[in-house]
Image 1 (cartoon, rainbow, N blue to C red):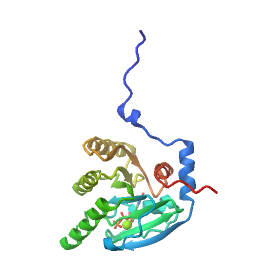
Image 2 (cartoon, rainbow, N blue to C red):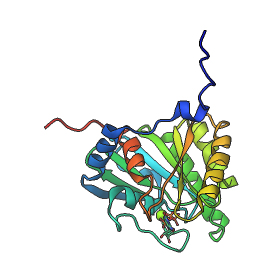
Image 3 (tube, protein in one colour):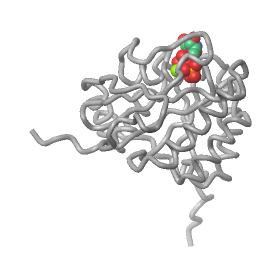
Image 4 (cartoon, protein in one colour):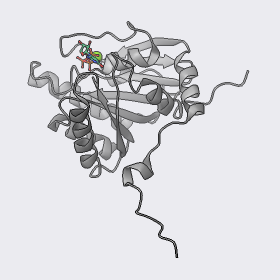
Length: 229
Ligand SMILES: Nc1nc2c(ncn2[C@@H]2O[C@H](COP(=O)(O)OP(=O)(O)OP(=O)(O)O)[C@@H](O)[C@H]2O)c(=O)[nH]1
Ligand SMILES: [Mg+2]
């Protein structure tokens, strides 16, 4: 009997690298019109639910707004800043009538008051738990730092709300390749303990465009079907 050889690496078995057609779907979706729909600081002002929604969560300054801009190819769509705490509301963007992108306020920012942190946390938790059209979330993690306790708390909230999510590393242009690989492995090792997390970690850079086409492809798979012309 021939030797079937060693089992493939579990990560390889799970590899969901998008194929050419999926990348093309992503490119087409993100080339469509993307419009700011609403910025809300309280849940009674959420835009009407309808399209599938993808929320971008992450620590303050991790690069959420920059990633939304890189994905949509519009540098000024979401406001970015060197100052943590720039995004202070849930900002909704409608993409081509097929998907809502939600740029969330950052968490883990030490300089805002405890009352403010409690307010945002309550708003976020309620939004994550109560929004029927929230189809998944992207948890952004700085590729130089890996997971912090505030990320773990967000991931536990998403697990509790049964919102499927992926962890995406940002600023992949900053660390050396070996350091990036080490952070990616360390994060992936923790994801095993989070039931709603996709087990693979993707690296991106809003600066160089690394990983952007792949992420577009993955998000396109969650969008409403394109209208037939
Ligand atoms: N080198 C590098 N810098 C980045 C990248 N993405 C974002 N930045 C920088 O990181 C800083 C924060 O970016 P934002 O996109 O505003 O971060 P945010 O997560 O939206 O921040 P808050 O809204 O405050 O929570 C800015 O100075 C960006 O230019 C990246 O891929 N590479
Ligand atoms: Mg922001």
